[in-house]
Amino acid sequence: MIELTKSFNTAIAILLTLFYLYQIGYLMIGLVEKHRKQQSAEHRLHRYAVIISARNEANVIGGLIQSLKEQNYPSELLDIYVIADNCTDNTARVAEMAGAYVYRRFNKTLVGKGYAMDYLFSRLSSEGRDDYEGYFVFDADNYVDPNFVREMNKVFDTGKYAAITSYRNSKNFGANWISAGYGLWFLREARFLNYPRMKLGISCAISGTGFLVSAKTIRENGGWPYHLLTEDIEFSVNCALKGQTIGYCDKAVIYDEQPIAFKQSWDQRLRWSKGFYQVDCKYGLSLIKGCFSPSRKGFSCYDMFMTVAPGMLFTLSAILVNLVVLFACMTEPAYIARLVMMESTGFIFRTIGAFYIGLLLYGAITMVSEWKQIHLSTAKKLLYTFTFPLFMFTYIPISACALVRRVEWKPIYHGSDQGSFIGQQAGKKATSV
Image (tube, rainbow, N blue to C red):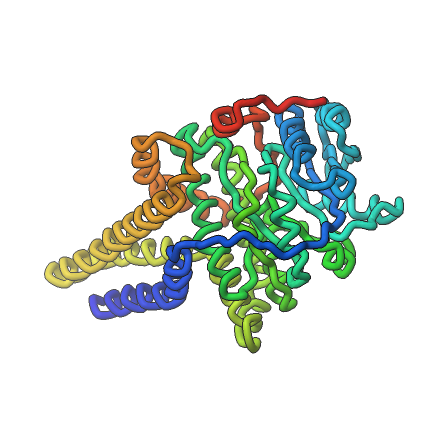
């Protein structure tokens, strides 16, 4: 039993290390100083529509629309559309007063952002209002940097990308350890995942908000046919499978409001975890096959498979196997039981320790590299670096729960149209007009 246990633990450790080793390369690329030269070439200004799917977001949507109205981009080339989706508050009224075109949707059967977006694309097409070259997608709680559209347009103008994602910062990073955990994760995603992918010509992944999708892609897809609980990842996987490339623009910055209550965070991440399982079930085999495709498509499929693969679940399963072995060895002679216990408990503690140290290092590297983008005191930055692994460890029960629970889309309450970051940095209040 002792040899079998050792072999199992060694195999798990080697496999997980090999599967994710390529991300060390991403880390190295992300650590290289980004000397951003100002682009002097002229770029054609394209015509875009902004899509905001909102459910009871009257508190925040006015701030987003105002930040879009204040873009350093010709206003006649940027139309704003809001889908007031199953709203019971005055979201639609606030959006209309702020200057957006508003569509009201009431459907308690087809619930979720993907259905709302597909509904709007269908309406725009039927009304002859689909003469746009691209569509920006935002969540209602976002705030958009004044140069966001102009910077995204520069990347879009290359004509290389089916979609483009952006640099996602947080409005309320310093509210508590929960919002800081989210904020640090999204900064890591931008700096050490999407930025290296962009440099290598590999397809990036969109993350719910702050992205631009080409009108050509929407037409080819017949709208937005992505209705899993994580429709953003489903879209990203589809692009990889089709050999299409998602780009990244690190000069285009949005600010996102993160949950600060653990219950809301649990509900949101439970949906994400369930959505990842749905993507695994629906696209897992196709992604594995796609890994053997030539050129960059193959690596994009591999990268997406590693993104959606339930690595946390595999690790948890390995720990559970060792716990079972611990109980089973009680029937063995004392000296064998002692050896098995040492091996199994050692594996469990080594695994937990390695995960904590790994997450701490990733959090610390991200915090240092993005130091100027995180507007907190040094003391808070240090504190939230150490709480980041704890935030990530809460994914263990969430991932386990997502396996057995039926999960539905639940709205996340957002309480401010500014957020602590915006209030401190901009010095002005976003209001509806």
